Every structure is written in C-alpha cells, then in structure tokens.
Amino acid sequence: MKALVTGGCGFIGSHLVRGLLADGWQVTNLDKLTYASNPANLGPDASHPALTMVQGDICDATLVRELSEGVDVVFNFAAETHVDRSLLDPGVFVRTDVEGVVSLLEAVRDRPGVALVHMSTDEVFGSLQAPTEATEDFPFAPSSPYSASKAAAELMVRAYSETYAMPVTVIRCCNVYGPNQHLEKFIPLFTTRALAGEAMPLYGDGLQEREWLFVEDLVAAVRVVIRQLPAAPGVQAVHVGSGERVANIHVARQICNLTERPLDLVRPVTDRPGHDRRYALDSSRLRTMGWSPRIRFEDGLAATVRWYAENAETWSVAAGEDFGGYFARQYGDRLA
Image (tube, rainbow, N blue to C red; front, side, top):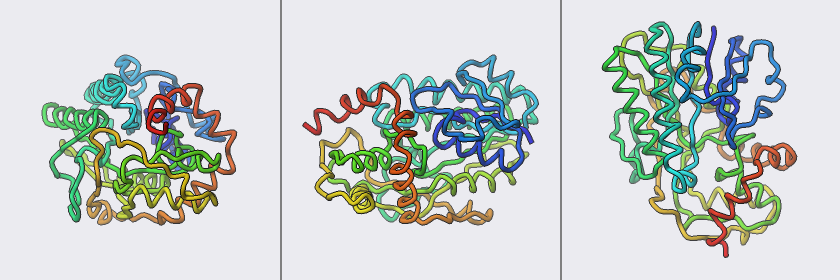
C-alpha cells in the first residue's frame, strides 16, 4: 500500500508515518517544516528506504496533485493546531487548515481511487456541559479561530463529498499527548518548566476539563479505521476518545509529583478569551469497529514526563529559536 501523509514531521504525523512504515507501507511525507515540525521526530525512520521526504506546502495545489498520483490513501495531518497562537494570528490557520484542505480535496477529486482520511478535533463542538458527549453527528459550535478553521475544513469536506460523490473519512480526536510533542502544548510546557523549576502558567481556575489520549493509541485507531474505509460517497466520521477526562489543574499537579517539584510552581494566570471548559467525545462507534485505548492516562503521562526528562537536548532543539519570544508574548504579562 502507498500513502501520502501531510504533516508527517509534526507530533502526531510523525508517529503515524512510523506506524505505517512498520506495517509495510510506502510513504511519501509532505511537510512544510514549520516551527512545529522536525524531521528528527521520525527517529531512525527518517532514512527508511520506503519513505520519501518532500518539503512543501499543502496549499501548493500542483505539488499536492503530483504527489497524490498512484497512492492508495492520503492522510491529512498537516495543520496549525495551537489555540493560543490562533488568537494571535488567525489568518495563518485559515490558510493551512481550510485552503490546504481544499487543495487536498481537489487532488483527490481528480483521482477517484484515492481515499482521503482527514484529521479533525473534538474542539469543533465547543464546550459541552457534563454529562453530554458529542456523537459523530453532533452540531458544531467552535469558539476559537483554531476550532473554527477545523470546522470550516470539515464543511468543505462535506461539500466536496456531496457535490462530487467522494467518500471521505474524518477522524475527530481528543487531546493527544506523548513524546516529541512541541513545547507550546500543555503537557510538554508544564513538564519542561517543572523540570527547570520554573513557574507553570495555569489559565484561570484550572478546572477546564480535557479528554487525554496517548499518541500510540491514536495510531492504533487509525489502523482500525483504514481497514474499513468506505467505498460509497459520503463522509464517514469517527471519534477517537479515551473517556479519561481530567481537569487541567489535576494534570499540572500530577506533573509536579512526577518531576518531584513543589505544587506552588503552578501559577494561576489570567485566562485566555473564549476558553472552553469541557470537551467530551462519544467514541462508541470506533469501539464497535474493534478499537479501545490501551494506555491509561496515569501511565502515559508518567512515560511522557520521563521522555522529556531524559531527552532535553532533543526537545530543546525542536522548540526552535522563536519559542522564547512566543512564550514571552503569550505569558510574560500574565506571569508578571
């Protein structure tokens, strides 16, 4: 089998590429190599004989059309994903997350035998009151530029599916974590700052609840989904959630305990605008397809914290030169 993976040097994309190579796929990895991408995320597989690396933009329609020729599946894992950055520069998110998806849809529309698997997020549904869980047909209610860009991308997917009779699979996932995640995200940010004995900026009261999934469990879910890709036109949406929902403040405290740092490093700061309180997915459809998460959050968090503790050189290089400036811009006044 042959795959085109977009964003395959990013956090989730690199784990997917490694999983596909392990399963015997031939993979072309198209990545723009933005601040959040790092070929080192692929580890030894960066030189795998079945992997072709291409630096490029998914908005380059000519390039995407060329790379999609002869593949069986296009996996779209290229995206701007950080909510905080979307508040600072929404236009970047619209370009990559919406225009880029249209570029992919156009390429796949020209090749009816090519399947498209598009990665989305639980954030398209906005904040949900307990005990509500979003099913695959739950209405969208995005509340940040990031989540709005992902919802808009899904609407384009649906429009193309209806207009051009295309089968498309959409995977909506909860918060994914694990080794190699960029430092801007919650668990890596708090872990690396705790290891350094620095303040951990916790938004508001810290009671925002997130559903957490270890990255290898997501890769396992993708394996299940691609064994049952639809042939008939339409959008097959599949939710990938662990069911383990934890308030941010409790995650922060667990990180302090795991790094043996004092709890007073957790510093409440002014909340960000439009901060959703709770996400929750109903993942029963995927469970009927034969998948269930294998890594409990407690174990996955411990493994992730241990990875950051043991790989400081790796993640400090991957953070890039602009991370310090970004952190000062995002948190400087709040921490002061």
